Every structure is written in structure tokens, then in C-alpha cells.
Image 1 (spheres, rainbow, N blue to C red):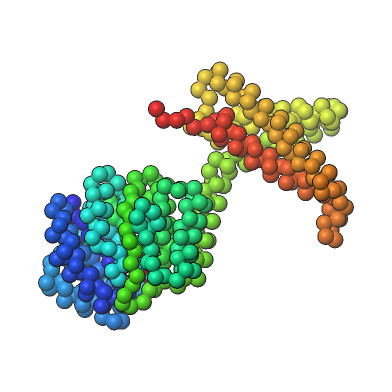
Image 2: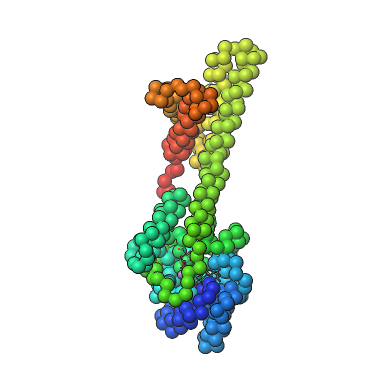
Length: 386
Ligand code: GDD
Ligand code: MN
């Protein structure tokens, strides 16, 4: 396979000078089964990085350079990977910093994982022998670790340890599939968003632990505060969108339709047919639950729906039982406890709001969580793969 190591550079003259000879004379000769190449993605560095690279290109013919304007690390990678694949014919591309923080001796391990069938291999600084620099000040170490834990927890993806790092290898198919969407992520956030999309689309991810060494020459280009904000914004907004567009969002829509059915039936039976309101509401609620059950079965949990009449009826019985338990014990129970433990109160600060409104809203929130959890984990639980 043709492999291209993409090194983004911005003012890395002294570093790229040292990295390229190591790759060419120490690392590439160890790799017999792949055609190894280098692409420097330089953003017109004022220190003359590009001129240095052009000198090295005289000596080694497997080096190329892509030059452009500076729009951030992600933008440089998108331009560089596009060039590596379209102009150089790469099957596999690497992401690698030019400042020697990424131990080049690990390259064969990344390739081995690709050969074994991984689509994207992530350098891992946080477990299995990977590490961050010993001499980093404590706050920086803590931030680095906490940020990655945060991303793993919010995305609920604990099997991938290093979301922010920039030492990776990937097949061209992964990049070509995600390129379009990645153009929105021009800075360092490119790393998290790329990995997130690759996992979402089912690409096989592997990890290689490595020791992230400290920078010796030159300066980091990251702006820590802006980056923290960007990570936070990206992770939270992506997760909220996933939840609302996923099963939980459908469940809320179904519940909204049910609420509407309940209300219309209550109103029609009461006003037009002069039923007692309680009976009218019981009929409305029973019909709403019936609608909720069927819509959840054919839409929210479409791929896990009841396959035969027996399981359809069993699920329906479980569904009515869950709904009844939730309304009586969870929603009504919250109002009961609120009244007794906190009180009935007449005012919220200075607003004349009776507290039971609040207990009702909170109780309904608990009810939604209860219902969704039981539907998702019990009634329409995932069948284990055989
Ligand atoms: N072409 C180009 N354009 N290169 C850039 C740009 C840019 O706008 N910004 C940074 N680079 C290059 C640097 O010259 C270096 O080779 C590499 O990208 C990494 O940049 P550093 O400035 O050294 O980043 P860092 O060491 O602080 O950040 C590392 O950790 C981050 C967080 O875990 C990198 O590994 C990042 O990829 C990683 O996101
Ligand atoms: Mn660096």
C-alpha cells in the first residue's frame, strides 16, 4: 500500500529538518511491505519552513509539499490529506506533528493495526503504557486527562481513550467519507470531530499507546482557553443533537401525539357527549397509551419491533403496566413527596406560583426518564448478537 505521512507545519523549520532525516533513514528502511512517503502541509510559514523542505526534496524523492494560506490545523490536514490521496495516490495517510512530539518509532505499530483490518488507528497517551510529558505542570496534566475523560463520558464511548491527540493513521476511505462534513472544523477541534464521525459511521478503530514527549524547539500553536471552549461547545451540542434526533427525540414526539389524543378525547366526550370528566379522561388516556405503544413499536424502536402477535401483545401488556406504574408512583409520587417534604408554598420568590406546578413538571420529567429507560432496556431491549 502507498502510505503518506502528513506533517502540518507552521514555523517548524528547525523541527522538520530533524524529523524528515529520522523518518527517511531510520524508520522507512524497517518497513518492507509498504511504499512510504512524506507530505508537508505548510501554511506559508514566515520562518522559511517550505524552503527547508524543498532542500530535503532534492535528497529524497518520496517527499512532497502542499502550500497554502493559514486557516488552522484542521484546514491544513484537509488540504494535505486531499493532496496525498488525489495527487500522490495514498491508500493510507498518517497525521503526525512535525515537532517530534510523536515518536516516529511507533509508525510500524500503526501500520500493523491497519494491516490487521483497522480503518483508523489512534495514538493513545492515556492508557496501556501511553503517557503525557512528566515535566508538564500539574494543571496542564489535569486538563489533558480531564478533557479526554469528559469527551469519552459525554459521547459514552469509553473504549477510545485519546480523542484530542494528533498521531493517527487512517485508510483513505475514512477521510473521503468524512471530508465534506469536516470542512466546518478548521482548528484543533478537527481531531475530535473526525474521530467522532468515523466511529458514528462504523469504521473500525484501533489504538497504539505512545509516549507523548515534550516539545524541544519552537512554540505550540494551540490557544488553550479558546480550545477548551471549543471542545466543550462541540461535544455538548453534538450530543444534544444526537439525543434529540435519536430514539429519545422520537419518544418525545410520540408522547406529544399521545398527550394531544388524550386531550381531544377528554374534550369531545365531555363537551359533546356530556360524559363525566373522569371517565372521559380514562378513555382518552387509554387511547393515548394505545397510540404511544404502536408508534413506539413501529417508529421509535423500529428495528426491535414485535415480530409476532404473541410478542406484540406481551409488549403491549408491559407497556400499559409501565405507564400505569410511572403515573402512579413516579409522577404522582413526586407531587406527594414534594407537598410533604418541601411544602405547598404559595410563592416562588415573589411570583405567585403554587409549588405543585413545579412538582408536576419535575415529576413528569422523572416519568419520561422512567418510561424511556424501561422501553429501551426492557420492552424493546436489544437482542444480543448471536
Ligand atoms: N499548516 C499548519 N497550519 N500547521 C499547523 C497549524 C496551522 O494552522 N497549527 C499547528 N500546526 C502544526 C504545528 O506546526 C505542528 O507541527 C503540529 O501542527 C501540532 O501543533 P502544535 O502547536 O505543536 O500542537 P500541540 O503540541 O500544542 O498540540 C498537540 O496536542 C493537541 C491536543 O491533544 C497536537 O498533537 C494536536 O494535534 C492535538 O490536537
Ligand atoms: Mn506540538
